[in-house]
Length: 201
Image (cartoon, rainbow, N blue to C red; front, side):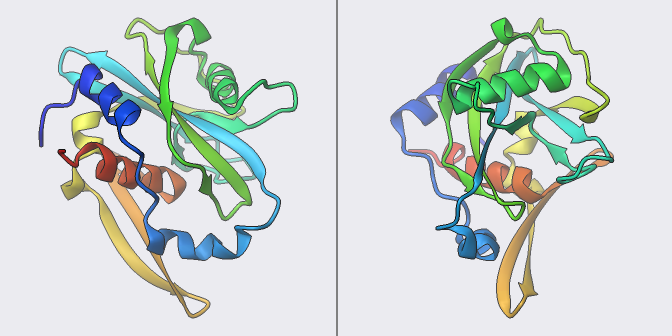
């Protein structure tokens, strides 16, 4: 695994077309392609640490309607008052975990990802100032933590399994980290990032 830093991460997303999400993981939502979907965005926030880059993740509150208790990137629904989906990701990150927008510097985004909960989610890529402070909203988030990028983007750590649902094959990805298990939409985004970032050109 080559050493990933801020400079080559920016280059990967500003000079290369992001890869598509794994085709077998998208079959379950293929019937939603032409339907009206609610817009949302999440923030994939990278932090420069002495040991290397890390990323902020949250554990969603257990009482939430959509994906309760799941590990996710901070983010949420697009509101009519939001000027863009990039703004949505930053606003939601501030509301959920208290990271000040002035500490967030966006440098790219990934393709929209359709979810089983009828959302079209845009992952927004940004750098977060290492000196950020966090204030968790317990109505939305049970926990927030950082995961090393060297672990998150290590293809050896990502598991996948092919399920048959309604006579259709559907691939699910999973990434165990300490006492957490990352799966669902978040793992799909991580798998696509692995394919995009860890492919040396």
